[in-house]
Amino acid sequence: MAELRGLHQRLEAALGRLDSAVETRLNSAELQERVEALAKQLDHASAENAKLHETADAVAHRLDTAIDRIRKLLGD
Image (cartoon, rainbow, N blue to C red; front, top):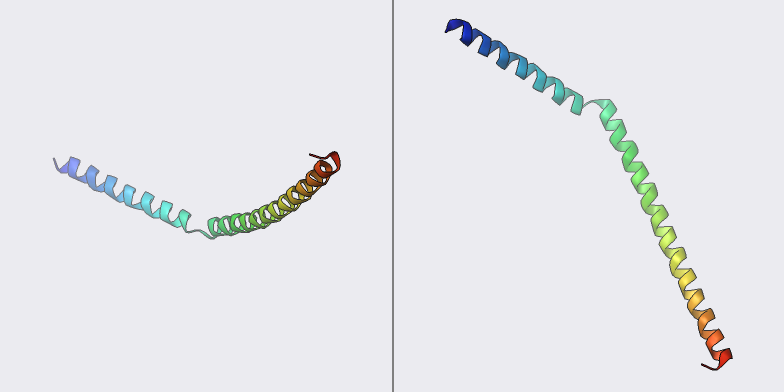
């Protein structure tokens, strides 16, 4: 029984070290750099998306205007 208790303690200690290693990894500077790089990419993509929406709206307006002119010329 004492041997089993010792094994259990060793297992608990190993799990504690593993948990600490995982926590350290998650908080590492490398991970933080990756998060910051992804945040910059997201900001850039969002800005690009906004520009594309503006362009699409402008094109849609110009097409609507052209269609209206053509209809007037055709007498519809």
